[in-house]
Amino acid sequence: MKIRMSIAALALTGTLTTPFLFAQSGLPGTVAGGVEVQMILTAADHVSHNPPALKAADVSIMSGTITSFTPLQNAQSGLELYVVMDDVANYNFSSKLAELRKFIAARPAQVAVGVAYIHEGALQIVQTPTTDRAKATHALRAPVGSKSANPYCAVSDLIRQWPAAASEYARREIILVSTGIDDSINEGALCINAETAIHDAQRAGVVIYALYNPVADYLSQKWSKVDSGVVNLAHVCYETGGEAYFLTHNPVESIEPFLSDISEHLAHQYRVTLRMPAGLEGLRPIYIDPASADYPRLELMVPESVWVAAPASSGP
Image 1: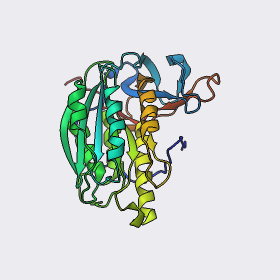
Image 2: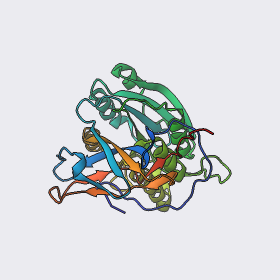
Image 3: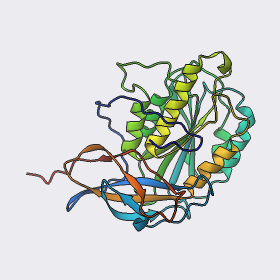
Image 4: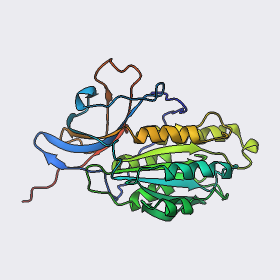
């Protein structure tokens, strides 16, 4: 597994056996020779911060054949971006709120921004995606503190409630501010842990970024618990094609460098349509690399798996 700058990702075990019904990523359907699926690819260069413009020939995918490769970076049209604040993560975030509002205000006019909160593990949507920057920034507040709970169920709830757009430029992405700590794992629940959110996001084609922020009394917490939280965040983001941001277990003074990196990622994305073999329904892993050594610092950020739908029935 790759290690990105500002991200530590360790594999967590778990399987998902419960079927979910929610808006899936754009799936053109069955075609001759297989099934077409779509995903978001992000070109990243964490050294020069100037990733090259790509075309399909620059990308090598072992698990399928590219049938279309659409640049999304110019107008960023069709992007819906949710900022999700976990109230548990309430350590001095007020000082960073102005940076987050500035980030929202700087989005291109076509980008729709939504705002939601997680309070005691429950999702609270306060602003659905809107291009009205005043509405989005007004809906934003600092985490106020709450009983620690599972933030990943709320992320899954948001994904299930989020309508999929039909445009070829459509993207749905999340910025999650959280500790990543799950204090309410319940084996009998519909949503079990971070793995559930990963599967839901992969199936719906949603990319997740995370900004780690601790609880107010983080210095009194067990370090193993804090570490588990940042690993969960890293795992969720890496597996969905996004990135998690933290330097240590301690809070950072400014999130502006992290938000700048997210802006860079959003400006260098592509919608990729793949033809994958029929008969492989379900979540299937993706293996992707640059096709050329001309860009040694280029990193291709994609979800670890994509959802392959069963072929549509042709009738009796």
